Image (tube, rainbow, N blue to C red; front, side, top):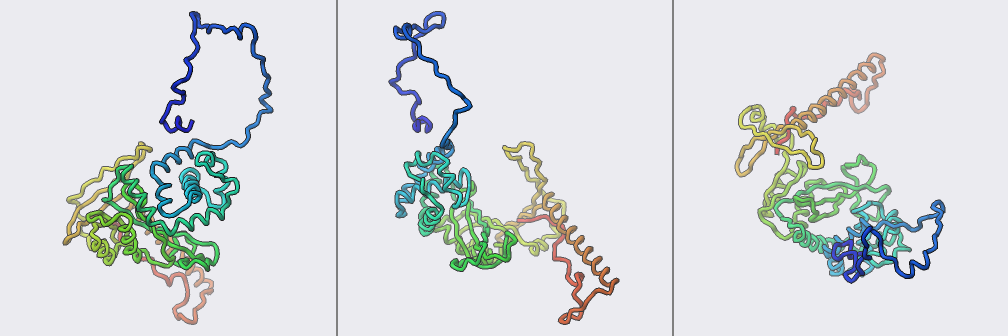
Length: 387
């Protein structure tokens, strides 16, 4: 049955007996035994039929086949992991692929599938502590695993190493995290400044396949991680001069661009607001604009794409793309209107306090501590983004 699902063999054996001959009129010839005795009828009460230990097999079977094609067992064994650790790693990976859960909830999901039968392992006593320990075994070998897996993916899916996209996210901890030296308080993307966190950097290729990842201290600035990630990328993929690295404006400082060039890469970055001001005159000119043809997603053919126009300009060895986007224009306008509305509300609140003589002076600041003391947040003109 397993071979049949994999598409390797027919579900019917090659030496299976041919179907019974049908005589003219559509009737099958009776055998001697059937003429003498008919099988006894069995009555079944459908209301009393129950199903026990139903397990999902389809999705985990497909995942198991892909695991084998990528040769992940061989990669993990080369890293020194035991047979049991390889089976646990496969189970955890398939859970992330099919029905992502925490390590605490994962054992029950594994037991609800046919994974134990497919991989030939016993998961009856599996618990979350076992899975946490398995992650500890995998972490020291991440460089080898990512390098070997990347090579196999490149061969299996005909990938290239011409474009890398790098970005960071954060993960925070509900607690002191005293035993985690990388857990620090810093800029929180989750709006949880009260919690310690770590930064996770990830590099993808143009097709979305992960190439490298690193975990950084939670108080690091994004731009301080670029050099380390470039080194990690080269350890996984080798030095690929001529490839293009894409990062956002938080990692587009001059020091970062020098680091990227030093490794032999090209770059595509979004410039910061202050740098856009130098191109204000070009933005206002109506010449040389080219419209970008944006096709809807195949999954959503009715999707409406906003208009985007670009203008190419060169400055020294760098090519600048000035971009005018309806979506970016609407976003900038919404930000400005929100800031203006907040300023109006603060001024009205201040006027109310003054009228009631409820405004109190701050001892350290002779100008008072009213809401109008703050300035309108800095914002550039309603200019679209440029790259």
